[in-house]
Length: 81
Image 1 (tube, rainbow, N blue to C red):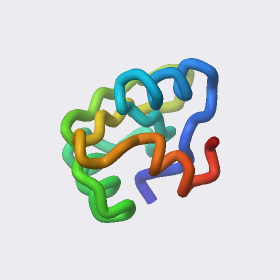
Image 2 (image 1 turned 45 degrees about the vertical axis):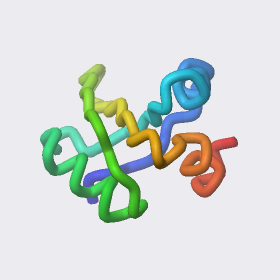
Image 3 (image 1 turned 180 degrees about the horizontal axis):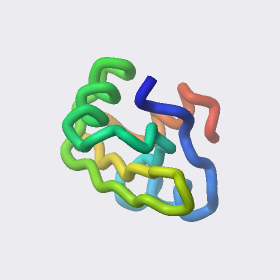
C-alpha cells in the first residue's frame, strides 16, 4: 500500500484551503509516478503535481489537485475536516 494516511496539521489544512494541495504520508520506497497513479485511482481525481519530502524515516507527499477537483472536498470525504 503506497498511501498510508492523510496529514492533518495546521499547515496541511492551510494548504488545503489556499493552494488546493493535500498532504499524505506515503511508503518510503514510493516514487512520484507511483504516488500519482495511486492517488488518481484510489480517489478518482486528477493530480497536477506531486512533491516529496523525506524526513526521519518518513516520506510525505504534497499533492496539487486539478482545479476541477477541490482538495477540501477530498479532505471532507477522508474525515480530515
